[in-house]
Image 1: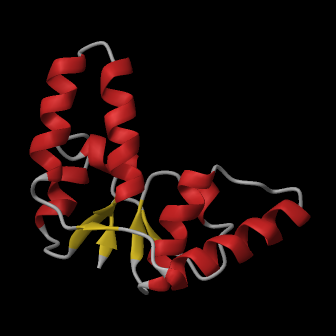
Image 2 (image 1 turned 45 degrees about the horizontal axis):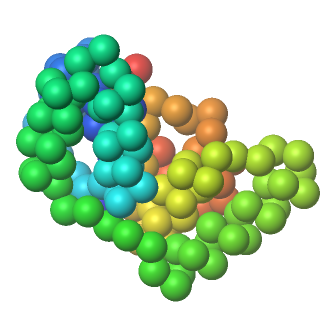
Length: 130
């Protein structure tokens, strides 16, 4: 399973770099409710809100959407506490996505390796800068 981060969900429909080609070779793509919320936040702030709402809606209709469960909530809490103790806090959205991936032994697909690689146990792929 490969949960797509927000940057990848934006890149694939727009056929940016190798993201569209990489997506075509994987049939186990999913996303999270956190990414869905970020897309619904970003679209109205963009230069073309209606177009981007449509792109997001069409693309999301093709993906299963995962949410939090007890295991991912525990991973989130432990990772957040550890990172704060180290002075390396991350945005909650990235921590939630990473925790869901770790709990499901999934590979996060993101161009934002710098954030996610701080989460213990997270596995990453980058389809944007490939």
